Each structure stands twice: as C-alpha cells, then as structure tokens.
Length: 275
Length: 242
Image (cartoon, rainbow over all chains, first blue to last red; front, side, top):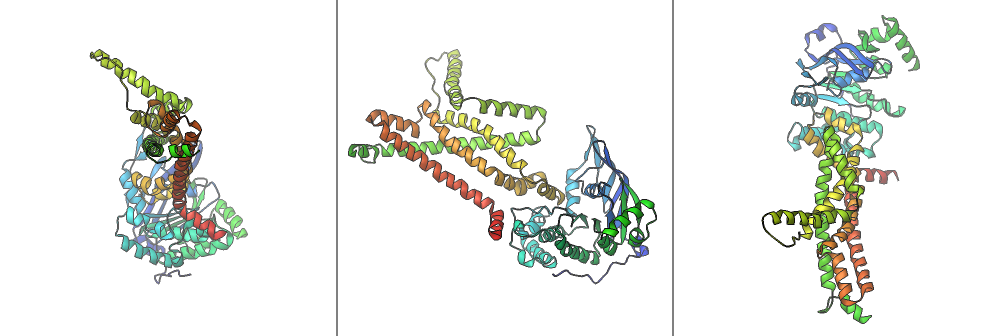
C-alpha cells in the first residue's frame, strides 16, 4: 500500500504548537437531545498540525462534539470556529439556526469529515465520489480534479479501484476511498468519527495506516476513536471526554499512561487492558 | 375467418390502420397524463417532505380523495361536470346549447391528477429509502440544497422509486381506456367502434388485447432498462460476488 509518509514528522513540543494558529475550535459547546444532555460545555481547540484524539466511553458525547464542527449538529449553546471564523448562529422560533447557510456551506467544504459508515455515494464510481465535490462545490476544472483524485487514490492505495463501484469494495477500501474524497477538498482540518468502528478487525489496520500517514504529513486532525493504542501513538494531544465535559486533556503520554484523574484512569485501564 | 382477417387487417376495407391510430392516441394520452402526474407527484412529495403543516394537510387530502374514488368518476367530473359549469357560465352571457370539452385535455388532467396522487407516495418512498448517511456526506462536504437534490437525492430516489414508477405507468396506460367515454378516438374507443360496425366483437377485442399488451410490454421493457442502468453500480457488485 502506498501511503505517503511525510518527511516533516509532527513535532509534539508544545512550544512550537503554541505559535501556530488555531484551525478548529469549540467554545463552550452544549447539546442536548430531548432530556439527554450530551455535551455540557465543551471547549477544545486544535492548532495547525495538531492531531487531537478524542476518547471516552460510549455516550460521552465524542461523536456529537465532532459533528458540531461542520454543524451537522447545531449546538444549543456555544460556538464553533474554523480558522478563527465563528459560524454565526441565530435564535429563531426557539431553535438555533445558521444565520448564513452560505457561510456554513463554505466552511463545511473546508473541512474533511470521515464517517464511521463511510457514506460513499453508491451511484458514482470511486473516482466519481472523489471528484464530485471538487468539481461541483468548488467548481474547479474537471481535468485538474481528476488528476488530483488519481494521486489521492494512489496515496490511499486504491489506484486500481478508480473505476470500481463502492458496492464492489470491502469496508476498509470504502473507508480509504472516503478519506480520499475528504482530502480532495484540500481541507484545513480532517475530522474522523470512529473511522474503524464499522470495520471487520482484519480491515482496521489498512485504514489506520492511511490515517497515520496523514498525521505524519502534519495535517490538522481530530480523531474520535476507540483504538486507544493507535490514538496514543499518532496524536499530539488527547482529550478524555466524560459525560459531556472535558474530563482530562494533555499529551498522549499523560492521558494513556499516567492519567491524573480517577475517571480517566479507570477508563484507560479498562480499554487498554482489552487492547 | 378470412373475412375477419381482412377486416382486422390493413386493406382498403380493413380497420388495422384505425386501430393503430387508436393505439398511437392511447400512447400520446398516456405520456401526457404520466408527465403531468409525475410533475404533480414530484411537487407533492416535496411538499409532504419539507412543507409546513398546512401544506402537508392539503396534500394529504388530495392523495386520500384521488386515490379513494373511482377514476371513471374523476373523468366524468371533469368531462360532464366541467362542461356543465362552462355551459352555466356561458348561459349567463347569453349563449345556449351543450358545451363539450376536449377529451384529450380532460383525459390528461383527470388521469394526471389521479396518478399524481400515487406518484406522490412512490417518490416520497424513494426519497425516504435513501440511506441518511449519503445525504449527510453531501451536506458535510458543503453541497447546497439544489446541488444535493440534483447530484445525490434525485438519482438515488429515482433508483428506489423506479419500480413503483413503472407500476404507475402501466396503470396510466390501462386507465387511458376509461377516457373512451369522452369519445376520444383512442384504442379502446376504436375497438368498440370497429366491433360495432363489423359485428365481430371477438376479433376486435382480441386485436385490442394484443395492442394493449404490446404497449405495456414494450414500455415495461423500457422501464426495466432504465432501472438496470440506474442501479448499475450495485448490479456490478452482485455479479462480482456471484
């Protein structure tokens, strides 16, 4: 498999990161579904080149938080900001809505979102999936998009699947195609929502290899995952989400090896023991 | 028997040409009614999926009523009822006599309205069958509503709606026979006329059978072809697994 491994490995020293601009940020985000308060005021930021893994028990709000960034869920309170630009929300009829759907669409196109269930479009080939949004959303010349898409498919190891249909691919291949689709938008940040949770165990490795390659390129990424040892290895910072708040946050050595809080320690020992 | 063949056939005294013209009229009427029904169905499906409460209630009434009464009654309503209304209005202005309406137009509107009600449900079902994740992926990548409708929702909904749309088409073809009550020279009407004139109802009814069957079979094949095309990706995958 041809995963480009960037030369400029990520330096996780906090001194260099502090100087870099914040690419993606949540500010006091709250979200409830019915009576269930899933997020109770979460603030979180990733600077350029940071790989932030978000871990926590099921129901701790990890996926909901991630889905708030492109406003796939609209926070009940708090804001999200991409590259310093706050996505404006307004109250209307007791509901919070985007003030300018054009702004939301533009910002969404600047983020790459990778879903747990891949969500490729079955009526387009693999290449068709990858060039769809660059051609129709970004309105870039088709020839240029195709060339770039082919390079991306090469990078995720799917060059020979260019003309295949999504239904012809394995889960791991579909997820790698979905990653290529996200990359084709030249995103400012990549958001992974449990990218390997829907995969058969033997297919997890190929997807993690691709994500690791992207981390080594110095891309800004938020990764919600249950793969604790993978998170410990690739992330520059880890966030432990606990019942809708940030329970603990720090370098991966701290979160995964020497947690400071009891709840984080209990969570990590429960999960690392399994892995 | 030889006489019957001559009468059903295309000779100078044969009814073959007349029957074919009737079949062409049936096809033209069906296509127009189907397209009208498709337009109505698409609008109503959209209204039911994203309209306000009042819009949804109105569409509910429409689909309930039009699916709940005999189609023949709807044709009567427009043809005779419509003629009566126009006559009444004309009388106010001093005109007298019977006002007949154009059978083709009445047929198109009546059948279009009836099948539009069915088509609403077919298209709505097609939309609802799209896995939500596919739409979410389109939203997440920055597509606007119209772009998403054109590139993702319409082709995907079509894929799920096509079998039902094919059914509605067959229904339209057969219901077009009811429009013969307006005197429109479509296939059913011509079969009747020919049967009466020649006193050979059996032969002409069989000829009508054959022509309707030819229309439904050929057009059914067209729908199957489109269905296969639209589901191409999944078909390839099935073949590969087999």
